[in-house]
Every structure is written in structure tokens, then in C-alpha cells.
Image (cartoon, rainbow, N blue to C red; front, side):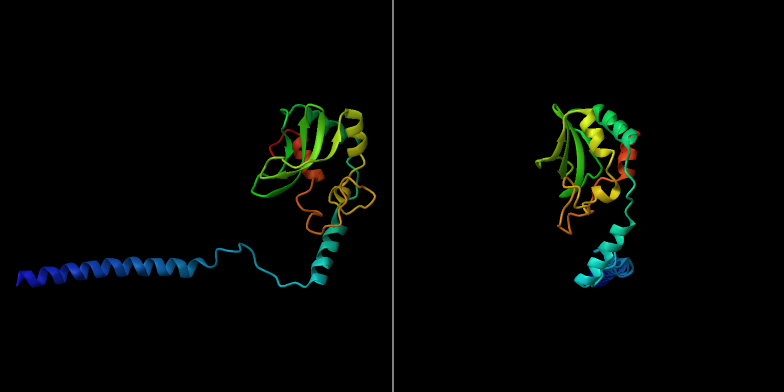
Length: 179
């Protein structure tokens, strides 16, 4: 008799444990929702996307950085180690624009994977050149929208305003705050 009851009781215990675990996993998955994407997807036409880009462009400040802010930016970059500087994004793939200190001065370059393997977009060897250039820049010009600013300008809609330098990012860096 015990030879029949013990296996049946063991089977019932195993079935109960497996059922409880399965039910718990199913309930967690049901309540969790979708993992990807972490934001709602939109199904926008190209015209709608262009309209949204224009709206964002029109919100960008056109106020120049000014000479004092540019001077402080140069001074802060000079405190960085060679090969380091203003890199405001550290993630995989394209991270936007960065300002890097080199032996010869400062370079503006695209940052990839938190590093700067791409060629320099522009270089400044002296403080005076750097201040003259950056003092006239604004969020609008640095975003790539201004055709009269060829260093930053692009016709590529993906590259325009994509993780570019901004006044806020520059201010955080020049104040010595971690980006």
C-alpha cells in the first residue's frame, strides 16, 4: 500500500510546485507589458516628421554663447588630459559631437562608442581662434541647421540636431560638472 501512496503523494507535490511556479511566471509576464520599445511608436509620414523637425528647429535658441562662455570652455578643456574633453554621451554607436584636447589644441569630432575615432571636423590651435569661433555659436548653429555655419551645417536630417553640443551641455562642462 505504501508503495502506491508515496509515489502518488510525491507526484502531487511535484505537480503543485511546477504549477505554482508556472502560474507565477505567467502572471509576471502578463502584468509586465512589452519590454521594447520603451516608448510608444508613432506611424508618421515623412511630411509629419519634417514638420516635427521644423518645430524643434524653431525652438532652438539663437543667442550666441559669447566670448566669456567660450573663454571658460577653452580653459576647462585645457584642464582635461590629452585625448579627453567634452564628451556628453557615453553609449554604444554614435554619441554626437565632442570637444577633445589634443597636443595641438582642441578638435571638434564625432564621438563613437564614447571615444573619438572619427576625423576632426574642425581644429583650433589657439585660444583666440577658439573664442572667436565659439563666441558666435548658438544652439541653432551647433545643431546643424544654419547653412552659414559650415563647420556644423548638414543637410542630413538624421545628423542634424542629433546629440549635438548645446549651451546647457557646454555650461555643465565649463562649470566642471560631470556630463
